[in-house]
Image (cartoon, rainbow, N blue to C red; front, side):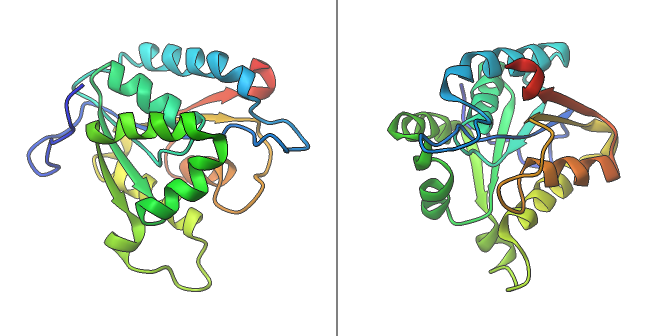
Length: 196
């Protein structure tokens, strides 16, 4: 796995693989959504989707990097030599605290194994602090989608690991799913209600 250094202005990906998905359930979650024991099933379905799309070194992958679906997707992309960009709603230390550590120390370790092979950008560094009436997660979803579509709408393939329901808070996979469907129809929905 090599560090992603392909500059946007000099390299155009064959396809852009955009991902959003559930985080692993916290131990105290009342309504199971992505139980830890379903990680292998989720990883397999993500891998199958990438293989169906023939993902490889000529492609680009984009996600946030949260524990659960995002990290599984990132790991699978790196195994196939896909360039990886992580766009995050907060500066990295706060993102790790909010979106990686809640799933446990092992997920933080996996995040740091991915990190050297990805380009990581934070919304506050690139776009400034969000206005008070703007949800940072929703802003990040739009940023991810706009960044992917900048390479051409036709190249974007959105993969989501989702139960089809509203999220626990604004800016989750449900929001990204709606945003993508308004702009591009290339959606690969891994419906967790059918997977487990």
